Image 1 (tube, rainbow, N blue to C red):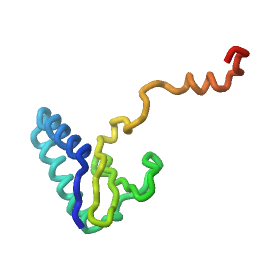
Image 2 (image 1 turned 180 degrees about the vertical axis):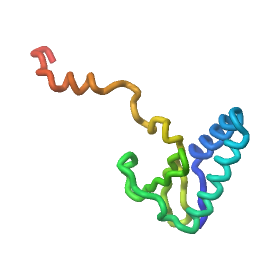
Image 3 (image 1 turned 90 degrees about the horizontal axis):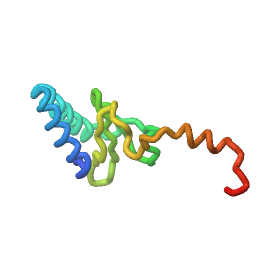
Image 4 (image 1 turned 90 degrees about the vertical axis):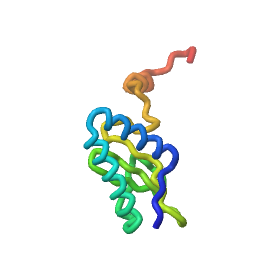
Length: 114
């Protein structure tokens, strides 16, 4: 089965290779090699990933590729990798604000003016 990268995933790969190359050409090559191998393996074994609560969308699977998290969907015509990120990066859509304050405010009784 054909494995394609979404525009967002392709953009991430380009950016990550550029970053890694600035630090170590061998690290950039290793990342590229791992991604090529993953694409080949996904084409043969589309269900090798697992579901995750972090992406609560039916039929979306995640594969851990070394330090990277690869989210993909098996479609009729192809497998689409739509997200790749380093495991130390924040998940998309997660606020950087500390929500503990919000929870503390919710537990306080509302004043009459609210």
